[in-house]
Length: 180
Image (tube, rainbow, N blue to C red; front, side):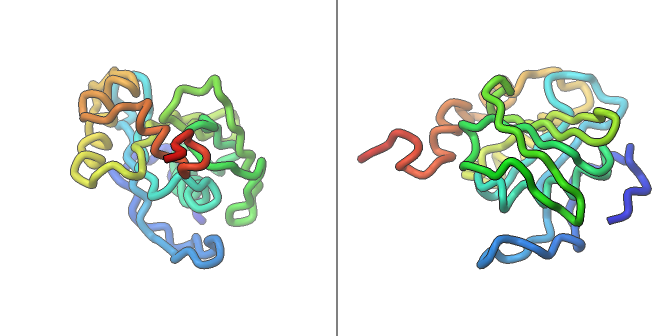
């Protein structure tokens, strides 16, 4: 993947043709539902927002890593809240580079942090995968508005998403505490 525009900011990264090694039985997808704040935007709580299709890091993180390389360079580390995701390996190889996956309970829920060379970092709000399309797209837009300084909880709540229930619904019933 060419990384000729490391500071490029686009509304939605839609096409990543280089990624062609999904988990067995998982179809190749080309759209990464991702938005970043403009460089001139307010700092705020997050630098962008991402709407993954599942809570499986092995499926979702490779596409995120490739898309984020446009902003932070070759991604070296993805930090995530372990309650938001299924179990993951500690490393992932994407297009020949090694990416560390770090589950950290001190990271804010419903976020991931992506770090590239020289500690270039972006924090992304994670829209729960089960969120209906219209609501999810609204969250992506509101989180990345140039003047938005809201917290992750405020952005989700303002769009009718309870951040606590979003995490509980992220895991299979055997892992989320639902034994009904």
